[in-house]
Length: 272
Image 1 (cartoon, rainbow, N blue to C red):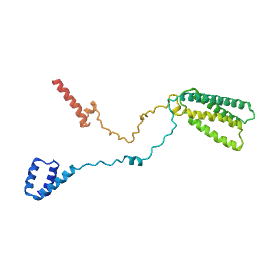
Image 2: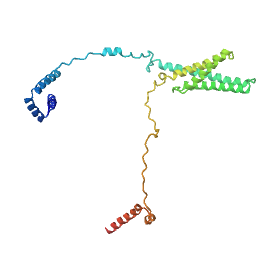
Image 3: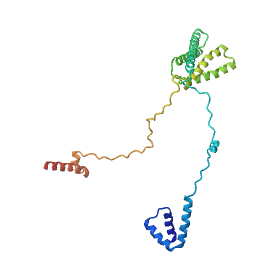
Image 4: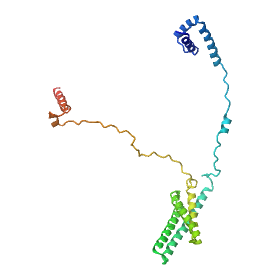
């Protein structure tokens, strides 16, 4: 065993990992090897210096890290507070205004139906379009009244009203540019736009009657797509032979063995 192997044992001894047999053997080697004794003295000094060295406290880099980090996003100063004193009167005022606009819109639609019935100079197709427009006005007015009376959020009406109001505004601008619409007709659209804006405000979470709705965790769907699942292999199940098959000499040996085994069991029970 050379000095390199003995020095590995000495290194383990400095770490307290040597065994009693290794301790006795390495001591005998140290008595006759001056180089290993010198190596052990230097290694012990280095180990002692490392273990007794003072640990310096690392510098505090908190300020530098915070300075290098991105500044937090600024939040809007306007926040809706559910417990504010003016929340209830505001909602009541918006619903009252929406109910009034709904009644006006409903009256305008019914009046349009009456004027269409009294006009005889309209073409049948034009008269139907006039009635269709009147039906839309009546439906929008009834929707405004429905939202004003009920306390549920009108989120379901917002997409349909947005499409209707947006299309109506584009067509009104085109008709105003071509001079095919009167000013009194455009003024009547203001009731529709005002009711639409109030409906959008009432659909906001902060303006709901009970405050913002709590966020619910979505339940996982019960539908599963099993295309990636490995199907279990089919297992072949042998059917029990019937008496005619068991008596047939051409039947399979396993088929004839089952009745024979049953007959032996019955004979043993009778003998017992």
